[in-house]
Length: 175
Length: 133
Image 1 (cartoon, rainbow over the protein chains, first blue to last red):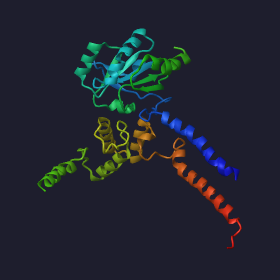
Image 2 (image 1 turned 90 degrees about the horizontal axis):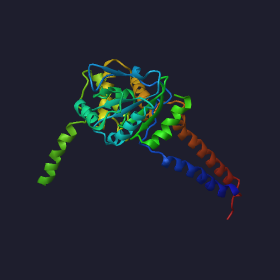
Image 3 (image 1 turned 60 degrees about the vertical axis):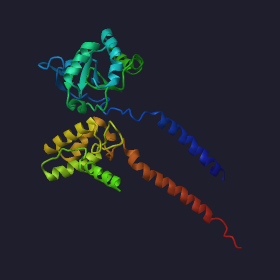
Image 4 (image 1 turned 135 degrees about the horizontal axis):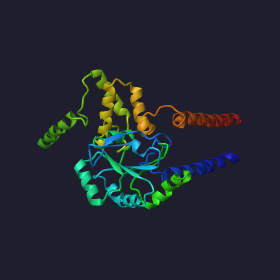
């Protein structure tokens, strides 16, 4: 008899934390299946000089950021200032992946806003984007010295996000 | 009446042109292609399959799937291709694995719990004295 009154209370007590957990998550932010796994390799023509290539070997053995961007992406414009700051601080080299974009427009963008990238790979048909599981720009991957993906951030990068999600992962193992 | 007719006529082109105009030469591959693209979620729009979506990510994925099909890959290999890049979430029917165990076993689990509760209630009532009016 006691259970009859207690049961709804128990169900309620279990359901509420579950719903709070469910509602506090952003369903548009998908976890990358690559976290903790080797990052996909790529070789792409250099955006600035198509006779050269940019490849995942360029940052082998060190921490690196791979930043997916495009000129049609407003979030990329938003984070560009921070990327420049980050590049200036020289904490981690940033490699660009220019995704599904127009080459001339992308070069103009870098000339006008400044170029935070060590090099930018040019991926106009989005093939490398698919290999990396990219579903929306901007996306930023943190790659470890052993070539594994340590973190992926979807949406513009900011100082706060950098300090919260990236720095601890880098500091953990020492640079 | 004329207006209704005009509207009806205007509707026809919409039905005639699907989002995906690309076709594979082999009808058997085309049939597999059409089935596979209804099973893959468009990550840009989330609640559409890549067959129904005209987002560029969907068209990129359709292109890759066509390429894999013409390379002779099996359906399973193609679903693998999608899942390693975008996770099981990208498949409308996630494959059975440790991660999706709760998803697949959940309904059965709920059924068993429900059956147990129902059994308890029914048994409780059976032990009640039969009322004689």
